[in-house]
Length: 126
Image (cartoon, rainbow, N blue to C red; front, top):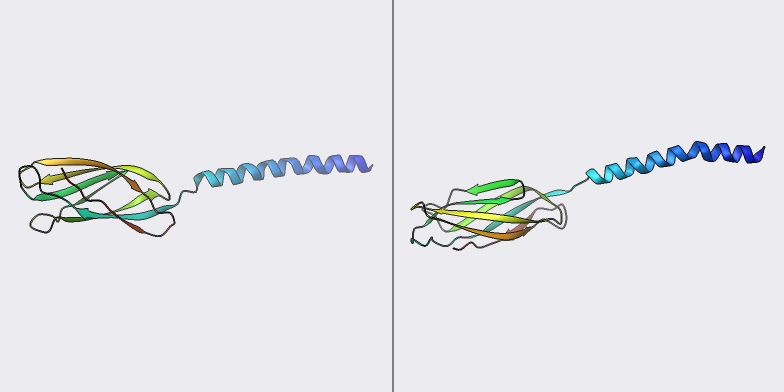
């Protein structure tokens, strides 16, 4: 009688533990922490010696632009909101100058190591 009770107890508990393990695993796979990454820096003039007008940077699934360079300093600032924690993405910057000339630069952009917003610096040059 005790053996039957033990077998029935184990048989009843097995489906519960298997289901719980599947649920926990599925929950962990969906949890991605995303933090803000603000990228700042300076841009150099283009080869035709015109001042920069716009900086556009694509990182991961986002493309951000700073159009405030015309007549200003050569400083830019953009904020990405979808870079995962501890992720490293390839960022591709395009600097467009007043004379419609442009130059491109690629670099690695690292996300935050926590959920706190971070600032990264990247100077751009032809």
